[in-house]
Amino acid sequence: MTTMIEVDDATVRYGGQCVLEGATFRVQGGRMAAIVGPNGAGKSTLLKAMLGLVRMERGTVRICGEPLRRMRARVAYVPQRSAIDWDFPISVRDVVVMGTYASMRWWHRPGAAARLRAEEALDQVNMRAFADRHIRALSGGQQQRVFLARALAQRASVIVLDEPFAGVDVASEQAIIAQLRTLRDQGVALLIVHHELNTVEKMFDDVILLRKRIVAQGDVATAFTREAIAATYGTDVPRSDIVMTRPMWARRPEVV
Amino acid sequence: MNDIIIMSTGLLVAVCCSIVGTWLVLFRMSMMGDALSHAVLPGIVVAYVWSGSRDSLLMVCACVAIALLMMCAMHGLRTRGVQGDAAVGVLMTTFFAVGVVLVAHFASRIDLDIACVLYGEMHYAPWMRLTVMGIDIGVRPLWTIGTTLVVVVAVISLMWRKLAWCAFDPVMAAVAGVSVSAMHMLVMGLVSVTTVVSFESVGAVLVLGMLVIPPVAASFLTRKLSTMMVLSVAVAAFSAIVGNMMATWLVASISGCIVVVAVCVCGLAALCAPERGLWRIARNSWLKERSV
Image (cartoon, rainbow over all chains, first blue to last red):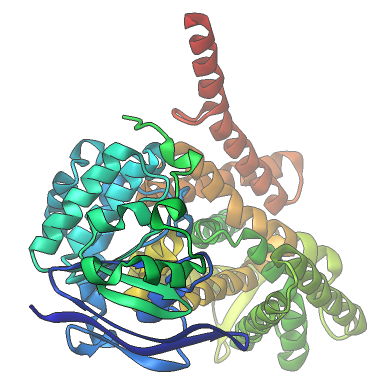
């Protein structure tokens, strides 16, 4: 088992205010890790710092033992839905082909090999039939599957997902989890921001509890304790009471 | 012969603007383009007074410098809590007002009046000659706009993938190590260069129409990036040719006629587009109602 993600002492300040302090963690290849914490705990900031999108005050990030800037092509990121321009004129297939851009020299053009990789990736998430549709003409869950396919086409060793299950119907959630598990079994390291406490144990191998600093981390069985959760969310209620219900918009039925 | 020169000037301007404009629209920076096209005025005047002619490289450089200055000021205002559109309003009028004052002040020294600044004048194109070392090598607007077109096409085809990436999913592009702000700068740079060289022909106001209307018309008709680019150029070329004929017929401003034709094409596309046209949407909802 190799260490894929090494983050040491990651500290981020926005305008003098410390939003992330001394986060140190490891994710092994073949593990699925959740980042869990209340709103404003710095989950997204941690991801952004790790991916070099915000400047860290101090701290280092190593991917597969190398500095991030040399390993960018091996890191895939599945963004929050709000980061995408949904009106952009692009088909599902072209979104997935974008995954192959990362390992391409800048004067290269995506050729037949890239398109083949995209088709395979679409097959894996069962979205081949939608390849020629515009990205907007899909349901939230299908869109999320397309972005997962893009990460597959990239053949990344590390995949980072920011709330992939927000606004996703149950069928797509199952499909995404199944695909993520396959990736994990192939040795990919997965780091996922998650906000539903009641599914953490069922879905993940490792957990990182975050509240500006890392409260607890490690195997779900040992780190995801009632005390740790209480310390993270600042309450002392039993775990079953802080379980969040699915918000209304997440119950949208699958549109096929 | 002169008619052909005027026609080709219009055609080159329209095509060049529509290519750059497609990316301007895709990056959702159209109002920035409007601001830029007005803000370059002080740059043009200063360069004109300095060099004594309109055809200098200095003018292009001055305008790109002004464009950069404006983008920095924009960034400064926005990070201090001024809303984006308010910042555009403030900066655009500031720069343009300075330009207008400069034009009036130097009126005796430069051949540039406010009407020309606003609407441009294409009729005189055949008499603007470009001389290199005393030899007349042809019509200046054709040379400048032609060169710009070549540069624009070269830069955009080299950067195509990165531009698409940054416009569609800037976060992933940044993760992959592409500088999103550099791509924004690139688009704004191309817009300012295009604006400067089209300035004499179409003016500061109508150039925005040439930048934005053809891609908007194209976006009604397709949802594929490369097709959108081709359609946008086609709309621009069509408007340039028909607009030119219309201007001769009506004895009106050529640039005005080109934009009017482009708007008509855009309106037609909005009404009759195969998938998202108003007619189609109305028909679909009528059919749905009837079936219920």
